[in-house]
Image (cartoon, rainbow, N blue to C red; front, side, top):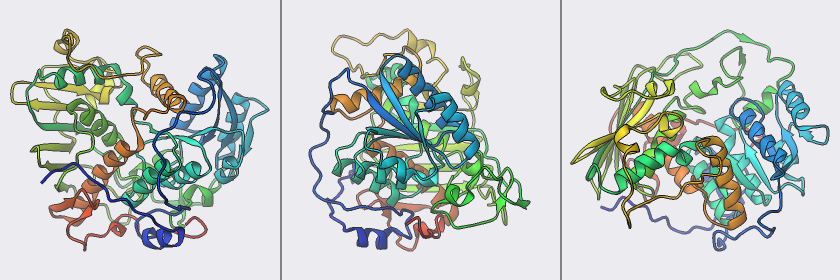
Length: 456
């Protein structure tokens, strides 16, 4: 059985789409049609500035604003607007960008702004799919933080929206633009470790349980808009905002859907496995916390089985960092991946962000005629700036970006599969073509039980 997916072309009306996917975790408006050829180069000149809008302004989103300001200072882009549901963050960001920057609490109003060519989305994960789909239909190119979505249906809708509107959608798995990633990829792709038969990924445990005491939301936070499509619930100080949504199964999924998609995305690039998906998944872990906001297990192990070619992907928390090679950056002690081949093995720390590649990789030179993968290198070793520059260049040239939405969707599906196998408590067979479990009784609603009006 080939594990390379071949999706059937489908045309779905808005009414049918919403009806079919409400349980699967995506609201928003879609009207699928025959997709034009992907991609077309932007009509502006190569040196003409793009105008950006930012949806989300805190955490990673704040870093995106910083990088945008850097490029604006170099005369390479404009920043027209910012949307944020936390008024303190919104005011602080406007002060950074300037008085001419328009501000919104409803992202749909930002998307109506005609002078905006592209948006950077740095909101909590449960908003990614809806905001990306709406942005593509509004004619905007998109840079959206990882993971691309919380559900299979949401991610597939993002892919279709990007293709049907010929929009460039880059996902923030920045390690795909990292120097160490590409050094290791060239090393592996040129046969230096032989045939890859296992990739082992390790990461520190998840936070679990978390705060429980309810309180009124802070006055500066629009709690209703922060939740968006999630079911309404009491506010718990320190459990959700800022940045702690990651530890809820329904909308964050734990580190496997955070750092995990970083690790998976670079692992697939290194091994040349983009477009291939597993046929079986098995997961074990600590008991799931009961009556807790952070309801993910502290420890989790997931094993994915691939066919044609046969290989295995393992995600383990806390896992075991291999001995004999020390990372050059502290983050590399927390997570990474080991590629096992039939001749040798090699390690990639922290998804290629900061830690150097192993010495044997740094000493390696690609032979004449060998595999030498493309990497945006405009900003040297600055992985974040290069990933942004890669997206902007893709918009202007019409090529796919380094972390195209289709690949990013697959990585999010891997994380989803792992969590679902853990929730189910048994091994599950997966149909890569249908993007669903063979056992139809395993419903996606186990993680995302419902959506609420008016956000669907």
